[in-house]
Length: 166
Image (cartoon, rainbow, N blue to C red; front, side, top):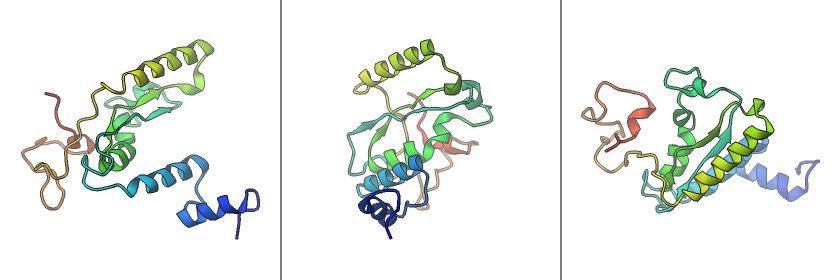
């Protein structure tokens, strides 16, 4: 049965994708992830290898809330399912995210600054350093896909899946 508020083909497509009950942004992300998923292989070497992606988002919280001991955790860990689980897994080099913090309290001047900063990040896309995630088949993980003890000893959590800076 088609969605009564939208053309039948749109409602039918969402149902076929299994996303009909999700709110708009989540539905869009799920459909995008499903499309990208067709290209997956092993982390960092999937069918979309050689491409780069920048996740740009805004949050109402202050930047400090996403700091090392912030209540929300680091923004790269919050976005890990997208940055690593979707982008990196399909071969796309995920760049550090662009985040506008305190977006619910921005002024016009703040918005202009954020727009300029985003434009600068977009211009730097070709040369920006991606997040150095470990390759699944590069020897860092055992057959159970658990990080070998010699890497990031004494540490746990999502941060262990990035290589240290050279």
